[in-house]
Image 1 (spheres, rainbow over the protein chains, first blue to last red):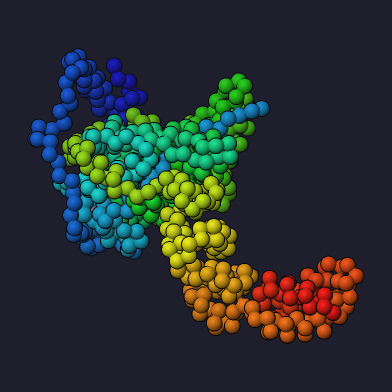
Image 2: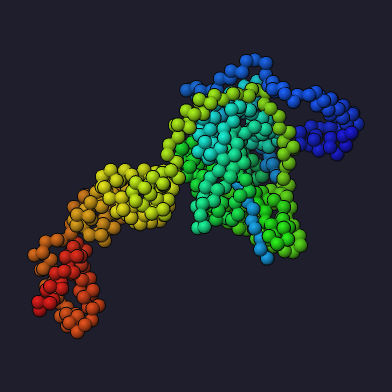
Length: 94
Length: 476
Ligand SMILES: [Zn+2]
């Protein structure tokens, strides 16, 4: 059983808004999910190589000559606030 | 009470590749804000990161140079956390399998060589840069987002600030030798975090590990370690303990200040990056990279000792920087006297570089010019003291020694006739000194030599002056 505190902590670091009304159902769903993971863990994978993808495993590393950048206008076009070509935000205190 | 300090370092090194690690933005320092960004490094929806070959190659070079074992599979993971300088809400890094496992760097201590072992080296992307303004606002520049980084994590093998400094010096020298990074702390291409605690060697009581960030010079690393060492011991002595937390070095206050409680590893919810499938690395490619590595400081030092008959210490200093070692060998192409060249570099040349706080490659001095200067001295055209003055002028102006000697009329007077004239004149003005000398006051002779050198404006050949002066006085 997942605790209320666990859910609230995970919601906090994942920046999810979970209201008090949703809390009980979130606990329920999360608990189900973990049970499912436990079920998967029962499968014996002792001698099985992991599969990360189903394509063949030739991956081409990037090795280009040219550059590709956006203009600063393009970069900043969707931001609400900018200053001197920078994105401007409220200071985040750590 | 005896305490042992236990230190582990995490060093972030920006790789000096042409492009960023997952996109084709140029990897450059100092450009105007937000002019080196694209949909990939901005983390725009639908953008697909692709791993850069050169970045991986540079990383592997460093891994080999630090004696690590290179993984034959490259797997990238997402490190999830929220911060304004992180565009995607996760950093593409390596968790489960670093590209390089283990390794070590040797440092030279008085009691001998010490091996500092490495835990791992992984490759990842850098984040953007924040500027905090007075009015509580933050400005963000994403030019740095996606610059390739390697993170070198040591085991807790370091036991003092001094050892940490030696380790960082060595690490920087090797990275410079292999040319994978600019390793400039002031530009942020080399950044170091310190993990530290102390243990009471009698009771075995340990303080909790604290992490120190925001160290922007090797000096700051040393000072922060010394500060924390003391703080940890004092807390244990008082029956208390440190908190497991991240602290920041405040340069002006000269102390560490709490930033936050440490974020645990599981809090980052690492998961494989689905955009970048695991990549198998051909052993031949790793071999090719290994062969492309230049001679490393340690090997070069051993060679210098054998080939040029240098002392362990001199060879160590001359190979500390790649550029200095090249300068030394280039000078030897013009004058075949390793002892003389090493003496001058170890002495006046390094002193001047230290005074100016610059590296040899940033100075006006050229190997060929230094060799010419030493030939002038060796051949007796100028004396040692004049040589020092000429060297200073060479540093100041970049002119060749021949030019300086001609312009200033510094050629040593070795002509016996001319010297005799000067000596006679000085003697006639200092009759008392001759009497003093004859009465057994040896100091009078030194005074006379000084006067003669002065009268010749430093150009007299000192050996000749000594010899002739004695002859002339004894004849009187
Ligand atoms: Zn980009």
